[in-house]
Amino acid sequence: MQDLGQAFATAWAMLTGFDPALWSVVLLSLKVSLGAVAIASALGIPLGAMLAVARFPGRGGVLVLLNAMMGLPPVVIGLLVYLLLSASGPFGVLHLLYTPTAMVVAQTLLVLPIVAALSRQVIEDLALEYADYFRSLGLGRAGAVATLIYDARFSLTTAVLAGFGRAIAEVGAVMIVGGNIDRVTRVMTTTIALETSKGNIALALALGLVLILIAVLVNVAVMGLRATAARAAYA
Amino acid sequence: MLDAAPQHRLGSVDRAGIFPLVAEGLVFEAGGRRLVDGLDLRLDGAERVVILGPNGAGKSLLLKLLDGLVAPSAGRIAWNGRPADMAVRAATAMVFQRPVLLRRSVAANLDHALAARGINGVERRQRVGDALAMARLSPLAAQPARLLSGGEQQRLALARALALQPRLLFLDEPTASLDPASTLAVEGLIEAARHAGAATVLVTHDRGQARRHADRILFMQSGRVVEDTPADAFFDRPRSAAGRAYLEGRIFV
Ligand SMILES: Nc1ncnc2c1ncn2[C@@H]1O[C@H](COP(=O)(O)OP(=O)(O)OP(=O)(O)O)[C@@H](O)[C@H]1O
Ligand SMILES: [Mg+2]
Image (cartoon, rainbow over the protein chains, first blue to last red):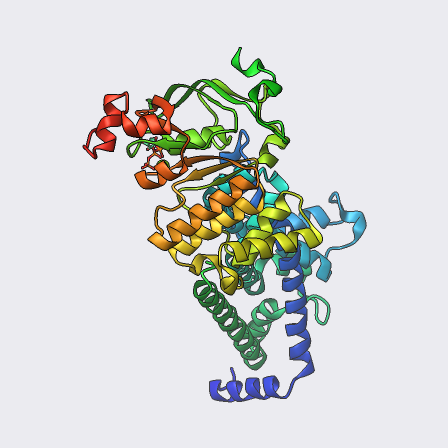
C-alpha cells in the first residue's frame, strides 16, 4: 500500500492537472446522474403533483408504495434493470446492458420515487392552502397543477437536488447494469470501489474528493435556495 | 317553485343570467354538527346584502356553500334555475376572510387570476394595471405578495376579485384588518364594483359598515338565518331577540 501522504499528493496532482483518465470518469458520472435526474424530475414532479391533488381509491396504497420505494437499495434496482435488459429479458433486443443508457435507466428508477414522493409532500401542503382560491376561480386540474408546481419551485428544486445527491453517490445499480467497463461505463463510485481493491489509492482518493466537493456544492445550493425563498417569502 | 321564476319578472338586468340565486333547505354537517341548518335564501342581484351574526354562526360557511367551495350535505342551490356551471363560475368572485395569495409578486397574483379566467394579451395587462392603481398597490407591484402587510394583502385580494369583473361578489370581512382610512378606501372599491354592475354579499362585524352598505340584512345564528329584513328596519328595530342582543353588543352563545 502506498504511503497515505503520497497518495494525497498524487490525487491532488491528478485533480489540478486535469488528468484525462480522472476527468473522463467524472464527466461520465455527471452525464449519467444528471440525465437520470432530468428524466426522473420531468416525470416525478408532475406525478407527485397529480398525487397531491387527485383523490382516488387506492391512493393511500400508492403513497405507501412510493414512500417505500424511496428506500429501495440501489443493488435491488440494479438487479431489476439487469433482468429487464439482459439478453433473455423483455428488453434484451435493445442491447442496452453495459451501456451508459442502462445506467441512466437504473438511476432514473432510483431517483424517480424520491422526486415524486418529496414533490407530493410539498405540493400537497400548498394545494390545501390554495384549494379555496382555485375552486372559487374555477381553475381546472391542469391549471391547478401548473400553478402549484410553479409556486413550489424552491422546495421542488430541493427535492431534485436530493435526487441528484442519491444518484451521484450510489454504487450498486450502475455497477450491475454498467459493468464498470474501462472508458465506457466507469463512473466515480464504481471506479473508487475497483481502484481501492486494486491498491490504486491515489485515483480513488481523487475521485472521493470530487464526490465530497459535489456533496458540499449540492448542500450549499439547497441552503442558498432556502435562504432566497425565505427572504422573498416564497417559501 | 321559487327557482323556476323567469328572470324578466325580477326587474333587474342580469347580463350573465345567474340570478335569481336560490338556495333551498341548505344543510352542511361536519363532525356530527349541523353547521348550516336548513337554510333558505333568494338573491335577485338587485339589493346590497350584508350578513351579520356572531362568530361561528356559519357566515363564512354560507358564502363557501353559495360559491361552490364546499358541497352541501343536503339541499340545493340554483342559479337562474340551473346548477352552478362554468358561466356561473365566470360571473362570481370571492374575497376570503383570510386572503389566499400565491407565492408570487403582487402583479403576478392579479395576472394569475385573470389568466385562469381566460383573459389574455393587452386586456389582461390593462386590467392588472387598473387593479393595481385602483387598490393603490402600484408601487408594490413587483413585491412578493406575501411580504405585504395584512391590510395590503386584503386590498390585493379584493383588487384581484374585482379585476375579474364579477356579476356577484362575495366579500368575507374584507376590511377586518384595515385601518380606518383603508377601510373607507376599500368600501369605495366595493361601491365602484357595484357601479360596474356587481351585486355584493358582504359579511362584516362592523355595524357602521353594515349600515353604509346594506339594503338587506341577513342575521345569522347557529347556522340559520334568524332574520332577513330590509336594513333600515333591522337597525331601527330588530325583530329577533338575537338580533337585538347583537346590536346592543350583548354577548351570547
Ligand atoms: N369545512 C368545515 N368543516 C368543518 N367545520 C367547519 C368547516 N367550516 C367551518 N366549520 C365550523 O362551522 C362553524 C361556522 O364557521 P364559519 O367560519 O362559517 O363562522 P363565521 O360565522 O364565519 O364566524 P366568524 O365571524 O368568526 O368568521 C364553526 O364552528 C367552524 O368551526
Ligand atoms: Mg367567517
